[in-house]
Amino acid sequence: MTDLENYIENDGFFRLHRSYLVSLCYVQSYDSRAVHLPNADIPIARGKYQEFKDMYRAYNNEIKSKED
Picture 1 (tube, rainbow, N blue to C red):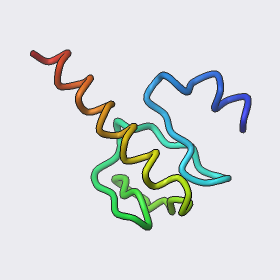
Picture 2 (picture 1 turned 90 degrees about the vertical axis):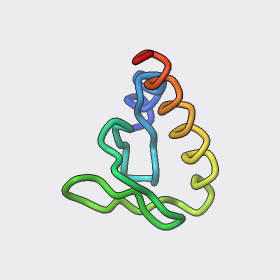
Picture 3 (picture 1 turned 135 degrees about the horizontal axis):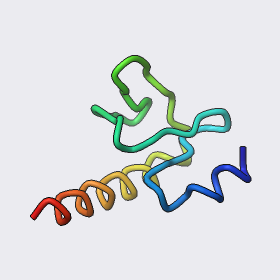
């Protein structure tokens, strides 16, 4: 999984937990415990929450700037 993570790390994916790598484009919402996707809730590792939040905000800003 680490090799895959390194390969796609700048392509809108984030590793939330040891076993979960998610595409940020499918995130509907999140809280300090989980990321909510259309058909699943994925737990966020405690140490990854702030990093996820920062990356998700940057991802959204990038998407919005491309739309303008």
